[in-house]
Image 1 (cartoon, rainbow, N blue to C red):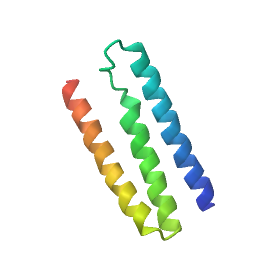
Image 2 (cartoon, rainbow, N blue to C red):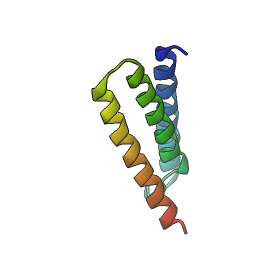
Image 3 (spheres, helix red, strand yellow):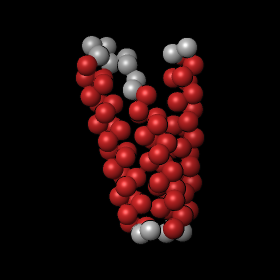
Image 4 (spheres, one colour):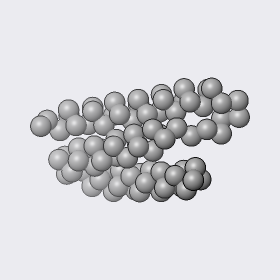
Length: 84
């Protein structure tokens, strides 16, 4: 698979997730609602960007996107706990 295809795919997932979150928050008067898709999409996008960066041997983006992945997982866990 082409590295650029993975990079653009990850970008598309991230943008779609952000658009969905903006849509969700626009319906909430206090903008307190957090879409479950925000962190799920961020996790998928981060995994795609890590794979893309690995193929390019770009350690800056590998490390950066790994950290972003960890923050997304943390956010997902926190939201899941609050909704119980």
